[in-house]
Length: 254
Image (tube, rainbow, N blue to C red):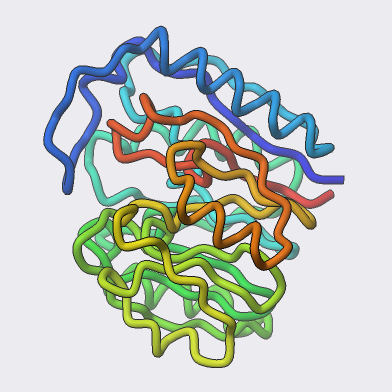
C-alpha cells in the first residue's frame, strides 16, 4: 500500500519563497481547489491520502516533499535551504515517525527533498541553491551503509533536481538537459521535455502511472508515445510558487 502525506494550502501562499520565477499574483482559493483535485487523483491511483491541516504562517508548507526523504529503511527529516521553511519539519517528523525510524540533517547543512531523486538503490542528490555540499555528504553518510549509491548532480537554472529530472517508468527519466547534466543518468532511457515547455520535467510516478501537470501537452504526448499512462492534473496556480506534482506529497510504501 502507498500512503501519501499532503498538507492543505496555506492562506499565505502568495508570500512564498521564489528563486527562479518572477512573482505573479497567486489565488490561494484556486490553489486550494487544484490541490484538492491533486489529492483526488492520488486516490484514483489507489493511494491512501493522509491530509494534514494548513499552516497559516508557513506559506510554502503545502510543498511537503522538501521536508523529508522516505526510503524503505528510514525517513530523513531535512533542513530546508530557505530559513523560512525550517519550521515545517517538526510536524512532518511527528507524522512520519509512526511509519519509519527517523534521522535528521544537521546544521549547518541544508537539504530540500525536491533535490533527492530515488531510482531503486540509486539516489541522486542535486547540488542547488537549496541543498549544500555538506547536505549531500550527510545524505551519503546516512544511505551508503544501507547499500544505496549516492550521486551528486549539479543543478542550474531551476529550483531543485526534480524540477529538471524525474522518473516516469522503469529505467526511464523525463529530463530538461539545459538544467542538469544528462551524463549523470547514463544507462537510463532519457525522454527530453519539449523545448517550449522547460518546466515539464516534474512528474510523479505512482506504480505504472504518472501524475502530470495538465499544462504541458507536448511533453505529455511524448510520454504517451512511449506507452506511459499519464493522469493530467491542473497545478498552474501552485506552479506560480515554484511547485510541481512531486512537491505536494510525501509517498510512503507500507
